[in-house]
Image (cartoon, rainbow, N blue to C red):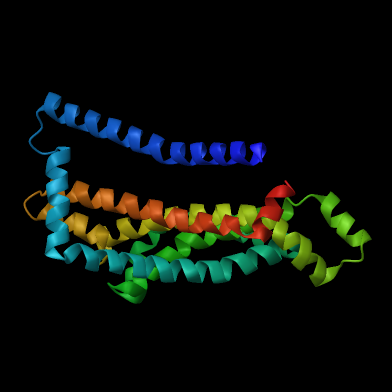
Amino acid sequence: MALAVVGTARWQSARQQSVLLPMAISCFLVVLWELACRWTQSRIFPTPGQTWAGLLELIESNRLWGDIAASLFRVTWGFVLAVAVGIPLGLVVGWSTRTFRALNPIIQGLRPISPIAWIPIAILWFGIGDGAGIFLIFLSSFFPITVGTMAAVRNISLVHQRSAMNFGLSGLELFRRVVLPAALPQIITSLRIALGVAWLVIVAAEMVGMDSGLGYLINDARNAGSRYDLVVATMLVIGMIGIVLDLLIRRLERFDEVRWGYATR
């Protein structure tokens, strides 16, 4: 009973720290931001108060919600397609030595090409709109997911594989019951990385090649009388949405299969 109470107290303390520490650091950064604006006496870069007023203006105008929906729509479809293609491909390439030797050089050759470099081609193929954005998100997410899945499979300890084979597991059964669960933690990490990259890319793409979304909102605010209060407010919204998306991906770590994978490392 005493151990349970101590364990609960420690869990609550850790949970409070995970919330209070980021909040304290955020408040400290806001204070530094305010002091920097006063010290430089900048007439262009907004203060925290001006940024907050700009955020309220965006919310009251109802434009913000439409641009958030447009960005999330493109990111969701592009990311889901990348997961649907990247994870199976990564599992096959990572599991089969022959397939790895055939496809890995091609994947590694295409991977360093920045998704931003594909913007002109995406616009040429799909025009200005959702198609180009979804294509760019697919590209930006596909390679981190595929490479991460490949590495996850190839890094599985041979001890676990041989132990499972001694119990009669082989082929698809070995893959389903040992390889895939052991690879899940690293696959989830690759999903988190890919989603972060996707969110960066869609904002950049919307600034130059689309007529809606948060990136377009930033560009439009800058051009419409240099409304940098709206620019920074939108940047903060982008950051907050990124945090929420990362938390959603991290919830996958709670599944028992994923916890088993962590235990094998």
